Length: 316
Image 1 (cartoon, helix red, strand yellow):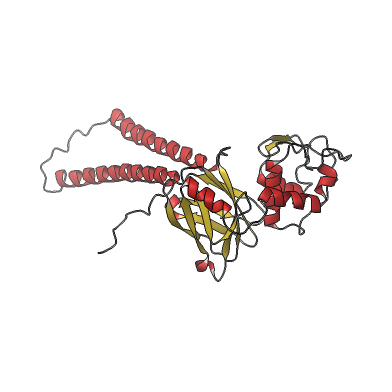
Image 2: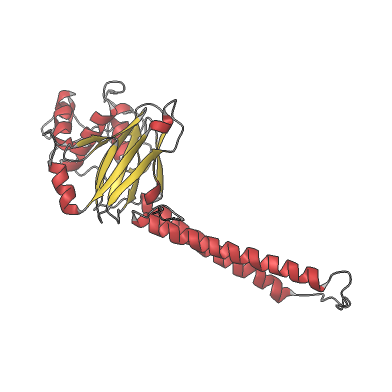
């Protein structure tokens, strides 16, 4: 028996269903406009051909209503599609407090993922069915691109930066993961699998495998080993910015700017501490650039996210 034909890859996430609907509407609208123009061209060519006796005298001098109609109606339709696409695009990057974070580090030529409880995997990414997920990406070497066709999502993983994308898996199964950015001689081999499991199976999978510290626990150990607690502990005599509930909080900077603290903000705080100086604090924190790897940075960030109740973080 021959394999069934699919016009599009399976839609394994809500983002895929929305994008497919948008693409279908765009195709139908542009197709209708193209067919309408083509039909009018053929009709005029036949009616006003050289041998035709169609009247050619007294052409209308004005047709304002027709001109307005053929300009305004398509404009409104395409603006509607633009607004639809903009809403769907923003939904991929709007932070969702309920989303399950998964941390992915790209490296020539593999995908390394870590979950909040410390479970790690290489070349695979397990996700819960029907629950929002936020994938936080970075790269250890060159630009890579996290691409899952079945989810219709693609997000670059950039060295020295954190990027993220959110979606909700809608169908259990295994889906192909590719790198969509040429990243070196073995780029074509940088593939993987995204495995979507029902919530109970996903929870069971998280607890299986080798026992290892969770990300927050490992981040706490790193926080202490690098001496961060010496300045940022609640009882420290050093005047450092407050870490409590830092992620997602608005931070006022010394130069008058204001930003929302996210993973990239904390990363810069550790590696480039003079980049964004918090109002009311002196730039006394040393840079840890070249001393902390990306996976350890993510663990420290997760510790700050989960604790933060009795700690403070330096953001000079």
